[in-house]
Image 1: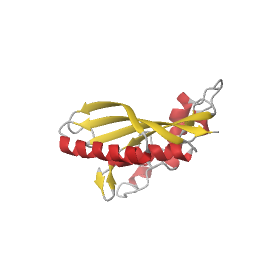
Image 2: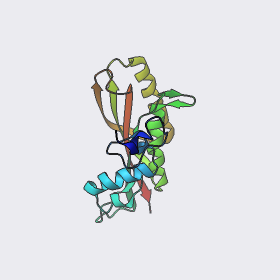
Image 3: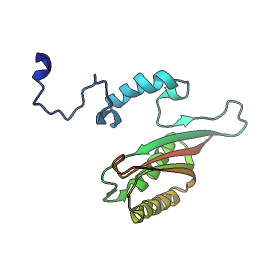
Length: 173
């Protein structure tokens, strides 16, 4: 270790360093580190006029559309701990978060998909509780879960359960 880094040897810092060559927890915070990661990696490789708008939703209405509405979409990943908390759980958060993103576009949310990454050994009764809260939240928001995917990873390879959702809505003209 060189002398310049020795001065930091015994310090702990709750704010991740921006010039790291590795992804840190701060990159998922939604703040400046998230923006930096999006700009330097995802926009570099995925840039297009829709994505470059930088929203939590996308207007995907085809230019040749003859309908009197626009189509909007959003996607969200949910990795929280604890997965059950006062007022809800990861399932309610997954539905409400995506519904909120579509609503913020001026859209009326209609359809959702849900993808689950579940750690081996996760109790099925807890999965049922999460699914029930997702169903309840979807009914409250008047959206339908129309597709999904489930993957199970080895024990210790995830933090119990991760849920990704995607939504589609319509913005009336």
